[in-house]
Image (cartoon, rainbow, N blue to C red; front, top):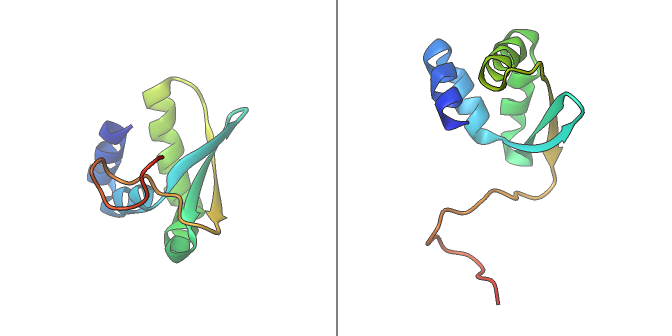
Length: 92
């Protein structure tokens, strides 16, 4: 999906920032839920505006050849993926 994010970034620079702040968390039917940490509430609010949402939904439809609706949510804990070799807890 990173190719799509970069393409969206060219169309609207702010969309790349919004989409890198969140992460896909659920696919329920044809609704893709993008989850944002609490400290990224502003990014969620931007994606909830009709203009930005329509742009993302259009790109998802083009990329995956299926019509998807975007929903957003806030997650109480930041569950971002850590880059390989990053600091943090390691599995036992």
